Image 1 (spheres, rainbow, N blue to C red):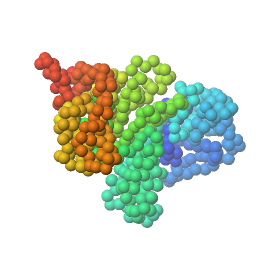
Image 2: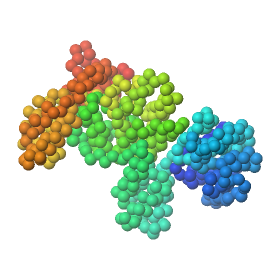
Image 3: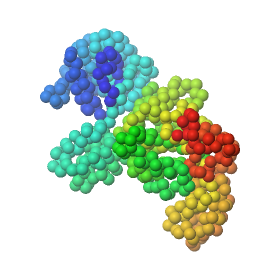
Length: 524
C-alpha cells in the first residue's frame, strides 16, 4: 500500500482504500498513526456491525463497538461524523460503494450530497473519511474529490508469519526450506494463503508445493483478469526463429545476482510483432519454460468496466498480482486490441482508455519487480507510438512467416507431436508446397490429415498431408496488403528479426539498418 501518513498529513478529506484484506489494512493504518505526535482515532463502520473504535494495545489491535443511534443507516454515519466525531479521526466506511453506486436507490443522491458537504468541514478539523472496498467504483459526482490508495498483497515476510501460524495451530512441523512454499503463495491474500497452507496439510499431511500452486492458480483465475497458464512447451517446440531463441537464451543469464553485481539490470521484456499464426504466442509459453517461471496471461479486453475508476482499479489489481507473484512471465496477447484505439484517440470514453493506457505505460517504464513481459501484436501499425518508444521493452522483434527450411522443421515438430517418426514422412516435399503458410496453418494441416487417415482406418501418410494443403488458404494471401505494410514498418524502424532468413534484402548502403542498430534504440 502507498503509505497512509502523507495523505493524512496533507489533509486529504476523502480517500478510497482499495483492498481485499480489511483487517490487515485497518491494522496497517492504525499502526502508521501511532507515529503521530497528536494521536488519531481510527473508526470503522459497516451496515452489519455499526461503528467500532480500533486501538493498539501491547502490539495487538483491539476493537470496541460504539453504541450510537442510527448506525444502521449509511446516512446516519455521515451525520455522526459531522456532529459527534472527535477531531483527529480517521473514519473507514466499509463497502460504502453500495450506497453511492448507480443501483443504490433513492437515498444515493442525498448521501453523495452529504459527503460533498462534509469535505470542507472534514479537511478543517482533521477528520478523514476513507471508503474501503475491494473494487474502486467511484460515482462521477465524486470523481475529483476522491484519492485512491491501493493496498498491496502480502510479501514473503507477511506470508512467513501466516505459514508459521498455520504450522503452530495444526501441530505441523514448519518446513526447513520454506522459500519455495512462500513464493508459491505470492499473489494471494493472507486469508487465501492461510487456506491453501491448511488444505495442503489436509490433503498431503505436509506443506506441499503442488497443492499451493494449484490453489494460487484458482485464486488468480477467479479475478477474471489473469490466469495461470501451464506452458507445456519448450523452445525446442518452436520451429525456426533462431535469432529470437538465441536472444532469449542469452538473457536467461541476466536475472541472477552475479549479473546484477556486474551492472546488468534484469530484462524487462519483449514485444513480438508479425502476422497471426507465426509462433508469437507459442514463444511466450516457451519463455516461461526456459526461464522456469510461472506464466500469467493477461486478457486486456476484460480490464474495462462501466463505472468511474473501475477500469483503472482492474489494471492496478492485475499489475499488483503480477508483481506479487514475481519472478514470473506476464503474457499479454494481441496488444493492439486493447490499446490500438489510443492512436489518434479523441477521449470518446471520457478518458478511461487513456488513463488505463497511461497506468500500464508508467508501470512498464518504471517497474522494478522481476516481471518479464512478453507482449504480442498482429498489427503493429495500430499501436500508439508511446508504446513502442525505447525503454518500454528491451527489444521489438518481427516474427515473419517461416521459410522453406523452417517449414520443414515445423512439419517435423507437428508430426512428432502425433507420436510418429518424422523421418518416415517427406517433410521436404511438404515444406516446398506450403510457401507463405504460417506455423499455425501447418499445425492445422497435420491435424486434418490425421483425421482423414483415422476415418479411413489406415496410418497417416505424406499424401494425406499433401491432400490437406490446398484446403487451407494461408493468411499471407488473405491479408497480403496489411502484412506487407507491417513488414515495411519493421524494415523502416530497424526492429530485430526473429530469424536471419526473414530479414529483408537491403542494398549495401542500408546494411546498418538490418544489423538492428538504431539511433532511437528501438532495435534493442
